[in-house]
Image 1 (cartoon, rainbow, N blue to C red):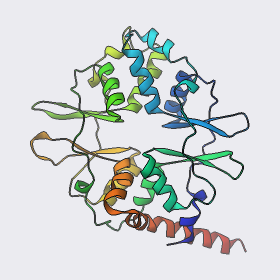
Image 2 (image 1 turned 120 degrees about the horizontal axis):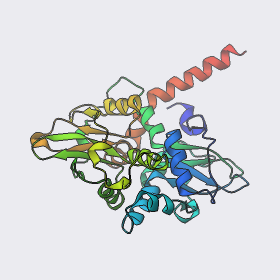
Image 3 (image 1 turned 180 degrees about the vertical axis):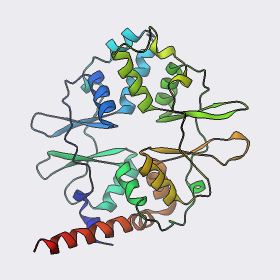
Length: 305
């Protein structure tokens, strides 16, 4: 394997957007929605990491509110609290000396979707996500010789098109899922509702476009109908490439009998594959992109001489 596996600082996103503990949950949600982020580091004035907030944290907070209130005004008011109340404190981080092997272990053992990247002084320099690892898997055209069926989730929580958005929030929070396939008996898949759709709806409420009872609206009004799908016998390289190309964190498996629903997600491609095939298999699956990047670095270095 190339030297890049022991130096992952070239891989992570140099995310300069961060927040303080006093930032409101609402403003954090709007920032995530506008920038397309799923996680934000929470920093002290010194730049050192204090915590991290995710879209899942916001969905959990929203669920608690919806147990008592239903009006859009009450929901927005409940999200004005500072993020320090709901953030995850002392998050697991990527540290100097961590190579790709250690990063994969941290994602898998701790079941997280993002790892802040800190330097020798403990200052946050960026963030690494599951999507960064999946993008490495999707870069090669060579098959991984592992099928979607090996890691896909078949015990999937679904909702009906006529269900309320409040129910979707409740299910996402209690089942710890980021997406809900929308299905109806006899008609199969209608679409998918994701936690990003929830963030977009919060933004609509803030802008006055949700109506008087924003979370009683039907899921069919807010779901994504154009669903990216994959076959159960497709190679996992195809799944990784699809997720990277379309910028999605999960795919619906579309060839199961009797309208059954299955999903394959970024977490499956890293955590489940880690548990079923081992870390060496995962490392090999990322080798093409690592070698290509290493070759380009060498070429740039030679051209600069």
